Length: 311
Ligand code: G3H
Ligand code: 13P
Ligand code: ZN
Image: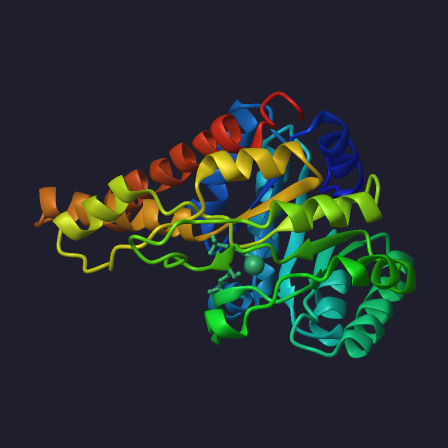
């Protein structure tokens, strides 16, 4: 099956009350771990590439790795640009083999966000590519941009109909209290998501796919492993999985996960080196790292997203 857009995936996910996982990819082991899990569980999957990933691995390497995964499996796979900052990067990815792009105008004014998103949508749709946009502002770190919690802004449901109508966008990321990175809530803080905003947005946009960024749960057992073997990650709390399950059963059709995959790989590698301090062949420590990615993604598909068997 060739690379697909997210149109069919989201239609089925909306109707079926589940979500498709969008996992960030930066190298071969991550691509393989994710797609092996999705393939075994017959789940559709979105592989997403950030500006940082393109800088690290180069556009062409990531596209070829994803093409290899497409040839190696029989599940629907979409290749998506995560947090495209402007028209130019979106155009480069549309021209360069992606089937979906995000134009992240969340730091712009409402009017400017509409104008830039509209421009991307016109170009993308003319090339058979779908577009995700964002309204509201998530806290946390993405690329080198760190949005402090005080500057985060929940999505205003009163703006969504005008935004979607004027831009023609295919899906919309909203801010309801999730945030990027491994430190979402401080210990003792009670994680909360504004499901009332999600409900109001979906009431105003019936049948329209909503996207949740910053949806890692930061499993404490893995943080413990990292710290047990020399790491120094501060205690932090991620998004509880029952909240993500609830979001997936509502209008949320795409759930973005990156930090949990990073934490899983790092825990596996730290443990490996603690147990084999004399080893130096990268294949030896990247094998358990790849398995850790696969286990994490299998867990998300089965316990959070509900998309097993939906390929
Ligand atoms: O939302 C951001 C993703 O976690 C990507 O992170 O920009 O460090 O690749 P990155
Ligand atoms: P996490 O940092 O919670 O994994 O979020 C990833 C994300 O939103 C990528 O766009
Ligand atoms: Zn994000």
